[in-house]
Image 1: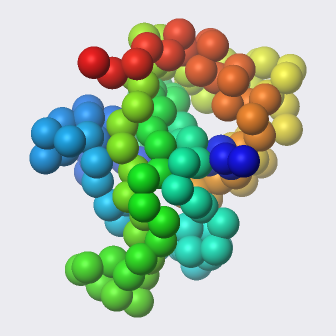
Image 2 (image 1 turned 120 degrees about the horizontal axis):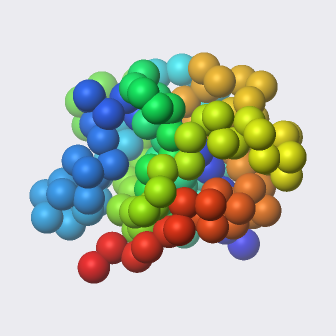
Length: 143
């Protein structure tokens, strides 16, 4: 059974559009994680087929802007083997970004790790949270 995650990305470094257009495949190694707890999640918990919300941090507004799917489980980062990466493929664009503020005021999302541990770059989310955010953002499959 797939798990669900929220991956944070600074869009000035690597945006959802960068993922969509990456090497014309929409697949990239997610090498943006340098926190030990987040690295542990990449190595030990994330599996092929898991769903990912892509969250733009360090921008205005802070928001979930798209979804992706894990296509390869953790392996050593080719640029720095002491770290791990996973491969993800862009899946859906949210036609309406789901802002941090809208998440905060949605009672059914009150338990999200994002609201309590905002600095962690890889966060676990429930299937219920996954569905609500995709509905709020009117998720549209990429063509």
